Length: 461
Ligand code: GLU
Image (tube, rainbow, N blue to C red):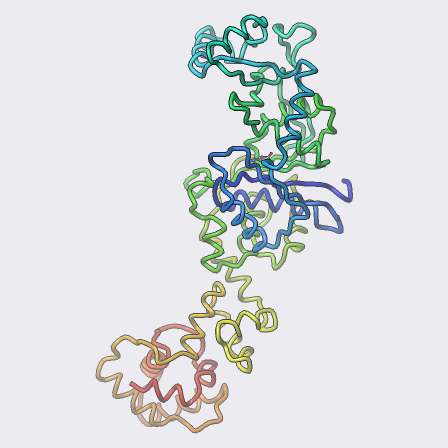
């Protein structure tokens, strides 16, 4: 394995990244960066689809990656590289490997059906290659504009006598792979409106930028056969390929960038721990249990592409809460002092506050809620009922003087018990509700000194 791989993550900015896209991004990032490797990570926006690509999406993609901790070494946009594609297309044309076609989608469909009806594979028969210069001039005079196909190298001398032509590669995930080029139609590389298509632009960029490893979803396996032929035709070095399985929802549906559901953006907005998302994205469908890694190097140490399952893996969003909680519970006050102060926790109380509430936080947003409970105004509480209200008032009259510490609660509760005869839940639940507005939460022994006598007295019902 080279010590300095060059990888790329190449999203089309046509929507928000989801956890399946993150899987691809992280496989590349971790492959390039862990275990002392000082690889280069390229973020490439595949934005040649002018109608669907939007700069806003590209911006959110960059922010999402940053949130996870992926900091690209190089960022490029395909829309800035059109000259390069034109030059590469010219080279292919000169070599006779890119030929103009004029069939309409309807005409192609009719051809396809005819082949299928005869029990033949629906592979394009290269009819356009037979057109003479006059034929082409006539078609263009009719107003037809050519689109351009790559002549796949699946013949020996005579392009109409295709023969089995195997392309092999040693896949980082799947092992030995074979695609027969005779089973494929010559791919369209340039549309009639001059727009270059992904199959082509991706190869030119990978070749031009010296990408050594292409790690991407298994939905690209057939492309790989074609793209290897294209890389070779353009005289580029062929990178190593790896195709990971795709993630699906629990119902087996594929994830879509356009749907927006479970987008990284929404998880970020919901305050889920980024390493929870990263851990689930990488470890789903890999051997071993899914546990939250604390940072990317730790996650990278667990990445073993050869153990990634070959078939689709279901991922369960409910796992995000579990993993997020695992990470949150491991955080020490020093790790998050800045965040806690930013949400209004007094600097001198950061340690005690975090120790008190940590176990009750799944994500950092929960810490903000507990801050409000502890340091905010009096909580809105459910109606205590007459008995409990009387009891609570009596109890509040027994509050000791400050200073308060972790033992204050015990001393107070004992005094209340002695005075009222209440014990257990009947004693602590009304007090908890009066103090916090909630029937659950951190230990009252830890909360009481944080709330302090003054705020506590204001909470007397
Ligand atoms: N833009 C392509 C996609 O999002 C990139 C595929 C590739 O990695 O080559 O599927």
